[in-house]
Picture 1 (cartoon, rainbow, N blue to C red):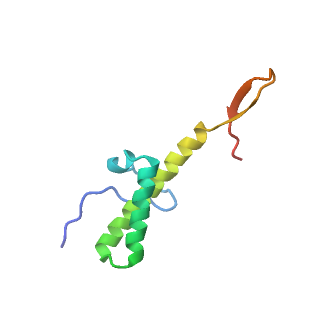
Picture 2: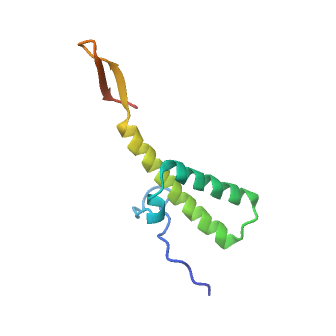
Picture 3: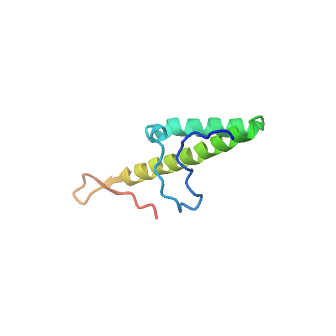
Length: 98
């Protein structure tokens, strides 16, 4: 039987598993993670990937998607709306996304 590499299990689609994102993915910027995810999708779409490689790529894609969503969430909380305050000067307020 072939040995598997010791990668963390992919998170459940419903978020039930609260596993840690692998370190190599956690170090990626949003743009790097998105590019890696796009490359995986392109490879899988060709249909020329053997089953084991496809499953491993899919699992990595799940982690990359989770990382991208987390990075977007972080950015969303930092965004502020710039407006004119009561004194006529610029003011900022947290962005209300709801």
